[in-house]
Image 1 (tube, rainbow, N blue to C red):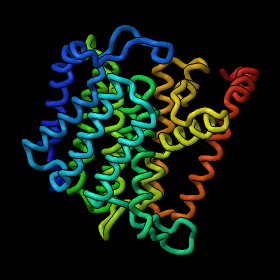
Image 2: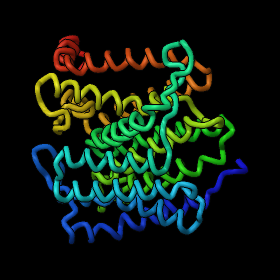
Image 3: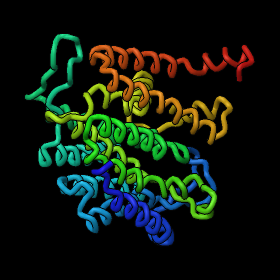
Image 4: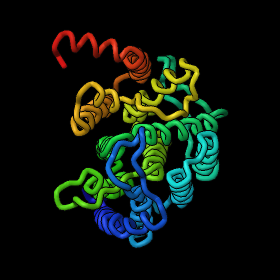
Length: 353
């Protein structure tokens, strides 16, 4: 791969790993830790500095090599704001409405200042390209906030948000390679390089035990922003690497989980932004799976969505087929989630659980 720049990737991984260690005592000093509660069942006070370390790793690697996101200084501006917002939320538990308002400010920077927005949705209905020149800016802002919250909401057990992000980002890398855009893979690979050392600490991999670290809202929202920034960027222009519906399928599972949860909350008359323990990973664990098995089950399902996205792009499945397929998946997923306890009870009667 003649265009592959490996230096920023290695530097990002090294800097992030060092910062994860250095920031641990700082997190305890400033009280940026996650304490056990009814919703958060873990032992001890865990530092919430994973996201900050990852962001700083990417920033410093870019500064040293001048290769990562070098044409997008606004990416770092947006990322800095989203990481700061996440840290404040981790520390002070901000209101949902206040957090949402700040996320829209970040999306405004990406869409209006960086001029990174969706200009068409592809051939969604089978009647030609679905152009959105007038509402593209506002539509993209809503999408950006949605993806940021999708990755934030899926971050419920060790390794889930980071692992899901790795699967999505490797899918992006592959699509860039097969579309003759190998010179663009440094960006997703650098985010991957920041996530890997975090996962090593978060999952207490051998050699990294004794220094458990959580991603925090800063980390999950930073990852969500980075992914949606790249997906929008790579679906636009004459040298686009993937189609809009391919991007949707890449992050299909986080989107479906968020949409289904919000629908369930709205149906019950609750705030759609109210946190609970009804996400897919919570359901798997309440069904009897251990945390690691629940993690693997969700990641495998997420990998299925990424696999469908990649296969659809490779074989150029019509976009309208992908669109209606996703709508079907959304309805099916929501229906299953709404009746999950009845389904599990039936499965137990059959002796399958």
